[in-house]
Length: 359
Picture 1 (tube, rainbow, N blue to C red):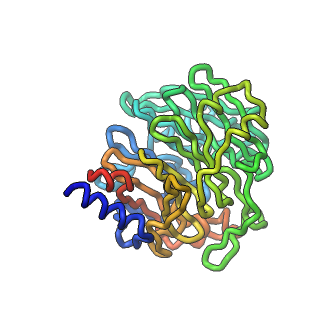
Picture 2 (picture 1 turned 135 degrees about the vertical axis):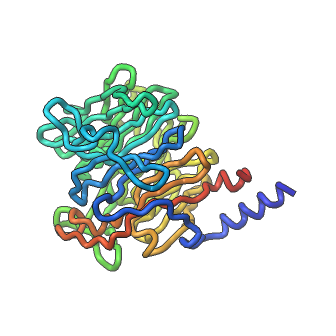
Picture 3 (picture 1 turned 90 degrees about the vertical axis):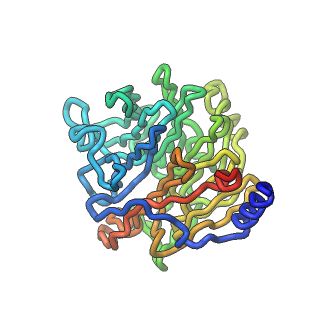
């Protein structure tokens, strides 16, 4: 009987769109707290970066169980960088690992190199800092998101760059040594496709937005790394063993990359135990999934509930959590005008593997 019900659930989820009213809204925010990315620690604590495209001074918060927020890790660390190095320049990607370390990807500017900051959420203390500077980064680097691989002691970072030099960065967590790989490859640079939302071509810097590698996720066994250009219709993957092999030439490494499946223009991604890769479809106000057969299906879709879904995090409760932040209405992507409607939120839904396994 259990197998029968599992079949029914699988048949339903494979059938097509599940409407957005099935999504659960777990938190909402006003204009002072536009969400960026999420990280959920093994303890269940939830952390959120504050998206810098809206010009807020706060960089990072913890979302408490009652839905309120507090600056995190401390008031001093959660705000602009001080002369002593304490503080954050600008945060996009955050990830919490199985040991409860919150890894924070802090961007670069003319005065600060990029960093990956590890904060121990158990002891509430600084764990480690990895610095990212030339020649691993470029003057036009845009450090976007990251995936943590504790099996092999590595962190993988998407550097969106200027579109021509988009690349991955591999950080050795034991030595701090970092390498820039797949720079300018067809797997990391944007495709020549317009980002159209609400019948408007989204622009960046006065030109139609063409955004390179951004979404990135790693499977639960740390065997495969999945990544893609935001402006692209393909999700790619590569075995971590190849990324970690510094002896491979650029062409040899590119030959190891596989196309995993179709996707829309997308921002964030995550993966479940069955190899379902979830992506946020930003031009169609949707959350979808790339199944192991390479096919993409929309799971949830709504112009009002999901205006630019951004980042994911999988919780210990079996739910997948996602941020929504209207980013196409932000000044950076809207000719300097902030036209947000205040539709900032976190939503959640059950992963397909959780449904199939009956949990």
